[in-house]
Structures are given as structure tokens and as C-alpha cells.
Length: 214
Image (cartoon, rainbow, N blue to C red):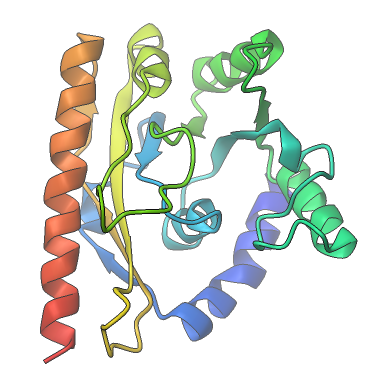
């Protein structure tokens, strides 16, 4: 966690200067409770904006290709330096590799270990970045995040992230909206509650951008 805090200390001013993120409803975060952060996903940089905007340490579930040096979070998979930097950061931040082929038993055990030891984990219910948000604001949500919360008797922390619309003139490039936490008792109902919460958050974010664009 020392490395995690160092990365956040170094990265936070860079994020503020370059992206000028707007943070909404941060008082919805209860730092005394271990929880599952569950943002929508529109950019590979999303977890770093959550890291920079909350004091919590979060162990993120991330695709295995970022841990094998095959890809980078900087939208440039051909640059070997950026791939190695991604690998270094993911391992140093205590992220957990997830295999899309379903061979992730060790990773599931590690995420449960973090939860059992009162650590926060981060999972994107959409499973991948939404590259066409104008066509559909959310991709179909998977159930993994909600099962982790249910099995560990803890909370979901929805986070609605909206990047600047193409025609928006605001200098702020992203809005991060922390929605109210909720306990998971029934997974299908929790998934619906997450979708409703994220959609309401995105609507609030869009209204804020519209105000800034006047």
C-alpha cells in the first residue's frame, strides 16, 4: 500500500492539472467500510481517476493482458515502454489479473482475501470499456461485483463517470460522481439497482457539463 499511496501522491496533481476532474457527492463514501467500487467504464484511465479522487486504497480487477506486457492503459499497445509502465503500475498498485477465458480461480481467491481482510476492491460491472456511449450509455452489466459484495456481506459503491462530450467547451474533461452505497441481498436486484444508480449519476453529470457549456 506504500507504493499505492506514492502513485496517488504523484499522480493526483497531474490528474488535476491535465484533466481538471469534477468530483460530485464524495460524501457518499464511507471510508470505515470495506466495499466493492463499481464504476461504469469508458476509458482505461477510469480506475486512476477513482484512485486520485478518494482516500481509499482499492485493489482493482484488471484484464490479464495488462499484466503480461501485451497492452497498455495509454491507448498505445505498440509502445513497449508504455506496456512495461502499465505492468509496473498494475503490480505495484496491487491490482488482480482476470482471465476472460474463465481461468481466474487464484484471482477470485485473492479478491475474496482482500475483502475478508477489510480491503476495498474495484470491479467494472460492464467488463470492458464502453466505446460507443452515445449509442448506449451502459453495456450489459455482469454479476461478478455483486456476488463479491453478497458473499462478503458488504456494500457496492457505484461510481458514475462521464468524459467530456465532444461539443462541450468546458476545460473540465471528466466528472466522477459517487453514488449512494447499497448492500447486496439479491444479486439480480442489486444489478438493477446499480444500473439505475449509474444512469441517474450520468444524467446528473450531463446536466453539470451543460451548465458549464453555457
